[in-house]
Amino acid sequence: MITTSSSIQKNPAVILRNAVNTIVSNPIILFPLSVTAFIQILCLEVIFFAPRQPLSHFFAPLIRYFNGEIYLHYPQNFALLNEWYHSYLLQYTLYIFVQTFLLAMMINILYRLNNDQKIRMKNIFQQTLSLYLNIILAALLTVIVLHSLMTLYGVVVKRALIIRSTSGIFYIMKRIVLDGSPYFQILLAGFVTTIFSFLIPIIVIERKNILSAIMQNFKNLFQSFWVVLGIILLPLFLYFPILLLRSNSHWWSGALPPEAHGIFIIISIFVLLAIDAIQYTAITSYYLLKKENS
Amino acid sequence: MKKFLLTLIGIILGLFVLLSLLDKSNYKIEKKIWKVQKEFYVISKDPKVVPAAKFEEVAKSYRKIAEKYPKSSLTPRIYLHIGMVYAVQKNFPKARAAFEEAIKRYPDNAPLVAEALFSIGLTHDQEKHPDQVLKVYDQIIKSYPLTKVGFKAPLYKANYLMRIQRTQEGQQALNEAVNFYKNIAQEHPKTPLEFISLRFLFTTYMAQKDWANVITTLERLLLNFSSPQYLDGRRAEILVKSINTISVSQLKDYKRPVGIYKKFIAQYPEHPLSGDLKKVISTLQKFEKEGVTLNPRSK
Image (cartoon, rainbow over all chains, first blue to last red; front, side, top):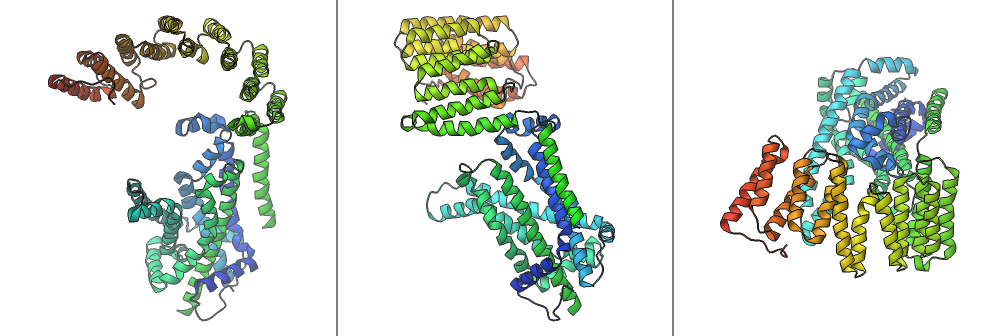
């Protein structure tokens, strides 16, 4: 059982602590996420070797066309690694078709653990696969909303860029918008995750189609918005040191070898997966508790 | 689960090792050169305070890479880097020895030899040996005219002569440069070589303040090299601005650019630039009608 208390805990910090304890005592929960990590590192590896033979036979013309000849060579290949790995095309594709499915598998494991059922990966895989279409649609919806908000934020950044003031309130606003850009973006992602946080658990646990799941998601969300927001935002702070280093690479890029960019990406993959694991374990446990108490 | 995870890790590591082994590109040598270059960059910031041993160390690091990868396509240039290290140290005899070593090792590599010769010229320039500098430039012009350095050499020679106050010889060198670029353009019509020659010819006429020929050269560039490979948006903008500015401010002639653009539109009616040129024509005609003039010195 992962839900031990009969009364619903409403303190996000306590819910998150319980989620971490659940993960520690049931490491099998991390199994699907380790597959996600594998796929992400595999993509990273392919991009890393893309400018080199034999993969360059296929990738070199693309690199020349989209980035330029220099990106085929050291150390600019690390800039390419950073750019291609973080591209919307790769990240959204992975999120929609792979990551969300594996997250759903993790939720399925949590549900079975909660019901004291035996964990058989093959069964979990097959059962989750039968929900694949709904899972993809849920991921697609999340991506569309996130991308729209990011585009909106892009408009704000463009507006800030044309502010000419070098002091005063407008200058402060410009600096907040521009310097805080990576942090606002992660907070936006956190907000979008919050508003759809019950979607995948409902699809997996209740086996509902996407439309019913959306309705039930919002019903649950309205009852406990601040708790869910806390559950989603608090673990995101784990990512802030990486964000700080990434957005200020000019501080350290001269002192560290170019390979450091690659290492940072690998670290960020694991940190983000840890965040996902904690967030979704907490949300699923919270949802199951609410369900048991309703 | 453990077995499965170990398999995943094995795949990642195995693929890494496999792709590293299959890699026959210059990646490893690029990495090593970059590291030494970084050191070189540090010592070249303030060479006066750097001990001689440090320069030797950097040169030695370059040599070590060259010896380890003798067949790499990047190795020939390493000898030029060694020469540059000594040139920055102002140890010119050693720098020249390194450049000469590059020539000796790769005599058939025309771009490299031309660059090595040019670098030798620079060391003589620093030591104020004008005859040696001119000798090197002449050698490059004669033996390696179609290399990157060879193309620039006639102009460099003229500029050098002007810089050392041998103005008459400098003017003569400019005339020779004009002939040099004209000949190459004539010998290689409708090729990238003609294109490059015309660009250098334009620069040479600019140096001579021969405005009529500047415009003729720009006209040839516009009319003969209109494909996107040569005439991208940025180049087109610079070309049109140059034609307008020089025609109006130096030649006081509005009809010349209008004539050029009309020819272009007639020749390439579907070209993306033709629409913009129609607007430029009407603006120029309006300026001419209103008697607008440009002072050559005004911005």
